[in-house]
Length: 176
Image 1: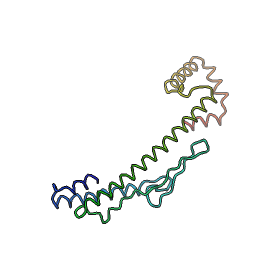
Image 2: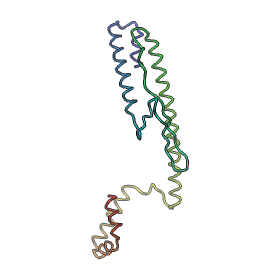
Image 3: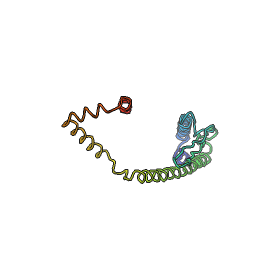
Image 4: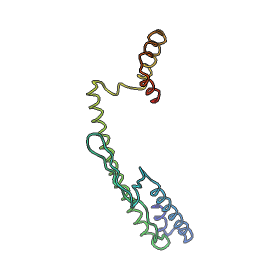
């Protein structure tokens, strides 16, 4: 949209070309507004005027709040054929608005990352192990080792199965 407005204010384009740019600008505004209206989280449309803030608990008693903000673009009355500089100014305001919100979201992401690091550290401390030690390769090696042990000693496998409570076995199957 910004590029269209810049082009429209240039003397290098004919009236017919600028009218085509106006149509494209309207189409882009419609597309933006369709995206804004269709973005939804828990029946909330946070990027519309009716949107509500989203509060996400992060585990230490605090929350990350994602404030709702209306990002619809009102292109009604904006005409590249008459006032391309006014159109460009409105588009730049919308871009600035989006960039400020992006910075706000980046700060919220940083808070979540900090909280996650603290929770991970507390878990590692409580368990006395590093969570980085639990990798997919380690899990595969462990599963292969146990499968090998059970296949070599069938009586142990039968004892293990016999000692498993039916409710626990059912739970394990449901989790898979």
